[in-house]
Length: 150
Image (cartoon, rainbow, N blue to C red; front, side):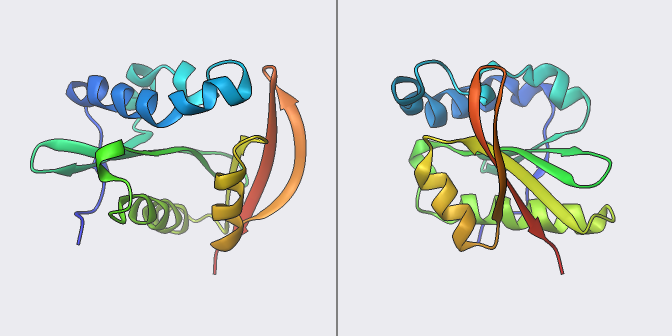
């Protein structure tokens, strides 16, 4: 069993950026440019308290970025270190995101992903997210999805 995610601290920034780079780099060729999470300012997001990490024995294995919005919690990013793929950390991070959204009083959690990230769209659909619409933002073709929390 993995530990619960903890709030990230500035000392985690380099590890967070490495996980994001490793997780999203394979999509650059498919999309034609770096995906949105590779362009985020993690120092700023950590300072806002939006980033959580799974830390196993001093090594960060996964991250999730949660941003409270007016009507829903935005699951802005979830990424797992390549060495931790298949260990359940990703599922743990997604469950944590939903628990956090409920604890903050939200009945809906939302996310978006690039339309070419079909594996992610399929995963999110399997765990209860439904597509609401597609739109282009910041030059990226995104699929928007929501999950209603019980």
